[in-house]
Image 1: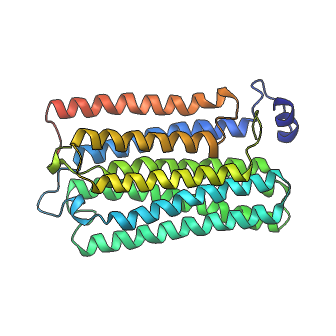
Image 2: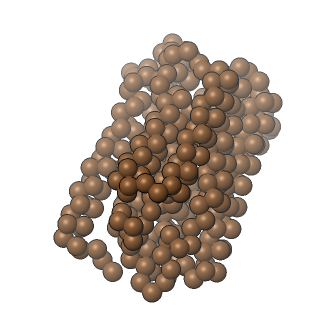
Length: 203
Length: 98
């Protein structure tokens, strides 16, 4: 691919990989440290609910499973957008980008709904160390999803306005890398936070 | 995008269906009464499999230059090592802040 990459990226690099792509992967590597820290804090505090409800008392696993499924499917639509861009089908690429943004928005709406229910049940940001750790972790992920949606929508608008790079396979791939990363963070987070039972059953 | 053959849309759909099935299995497992260690190990292994599949197929790392694996692996290994040490240390010394 080296030759293709050089030509497509418009510059030569000693690695044969466009600098933007390498930078994106390095950024994603650094994000592992951020989310690793937040997950560690959650694991450390999750048994410390004080007088408030424990996280496992308020979780709605079926609802969050549907949210997870939606985010997983948004990864599929993202990669289909890249595939369409590689095939030169700009309209299809834009449609899949918008679908991805839509699915991301559904996931976010689900998270807002879930937070609202938790707060009504007395599980708030300041209830206990466990609830603080939960809200900080999941909100950081939600913030990443929000940034991803903004990037996707911007890409579609820029593409419609004729900005040539917006619908190039490379640009869609870089945005896609970020989006898929947000998805894999949720894959780990969903298992660690929601599916693995709490300390009261021996974890 | 990549050094190898570009996977087609059909493959992506197959991978997504497979991932959805694994997610369903994870949720099912969380409702089944299993020995705690078996449940914990199963959920972590299934989660790791999904992680690797998304990174490999959707993020194209399976088809891209091996060099691109290094930044992600560096982040993952550093995070896992550092936070495992911290968690182990805090749990062993029962030093969980309140």
